[in-house]
Length: 466
Image 1 (cartoon, rainbow, N blue to C red):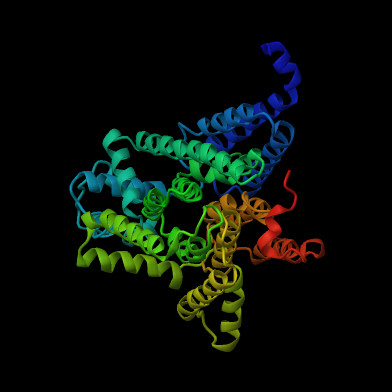
Image 2: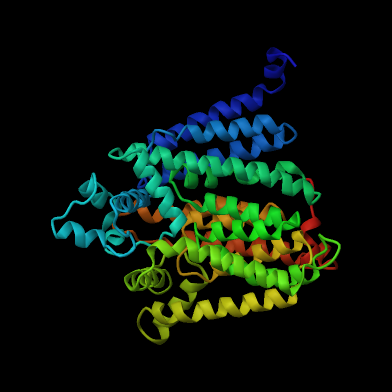
């Protein structure tokens, strides 16, 4: 097809792409986090553009893939404007390069003692904020390696380090596009579904734009599932460990592999207990190797204290927990986050145990649906749900028949209202709108009459050509 005919056939899609480039440029270079109305407007426009492009071009893989890359490259020279976490990333990477264990030093203590052991220490300290500066890092070893690589390639430039990390995240997204399409087609699902992830504004903005590494974790998780589906369980275990070494979230998925190994329909016979135990040992051993260079008593104490903060101190964009907190205020007269932070994880574990036992996954599609349910329950019961946390369930949802994650990936932007006021007070009405709609739609998908006879395990077949 000649270029002129291509343009005539796809001129509306090209107009959408050009509009998207302009909107994302405004998002990257002309938006402050405090301007909620502008943020919401740009995000809504980007969401519409992605939806329309996929609708019009779902059979044109290369058009959508090119669009996804171009929209990411818009952010290359921009500093993240919705998150300040990248300052801590760079701090940890430069500490590592200077021979310091980033897990055992508090940035606040270093600066307050008058020390400046790394290039740009004062600027990084001021940029990361008091909360990050006053706590030990919680970023896992493979993340630290990436931070160190960014520090090595851009010793003094903050923007240079940002660009290095951004290219790594984009490379991970390209990997997700490649293996995601292959896994979808192997499961008998439309390959274009991968673009509901790759072209999703939440993914583009929170990963490429704001430098969150959930996308790298998702790449290794996808690679692990794809290799397991292909019968290459040893390499699948290594990839799963790499995913854990980026973010700890995939650890929650390991129990759901039990019945997959024992009753897998993807091979001529079950993989069996021996291979299951070997799989777990490979994951555990690889993760241990990743942590080994940093291990010390100080590391364990600092790392665990940082993790505990997420369950017993931090509150943001929660749902069920906020209801529990309100009840606590009525009964006890104070915030019961420390108690709730200990009880809610126990409830999550019990629900996971029920899911693992009653949904005895024997095929990859049913396994992916169970993983989606598990991580959804986890976030419904969490005290903190930052927008980028939804990257994982959004990714899993494209392999199922459930679409509530697409809705949630749009509505979660309402949580950014918190940053539009100096006191960082959340608007509980907006949170209620978000969760009532998401939970209501999830419940409708789960229980609607026309699919009730097939049960949740088979629900992934509905609307195959969506």
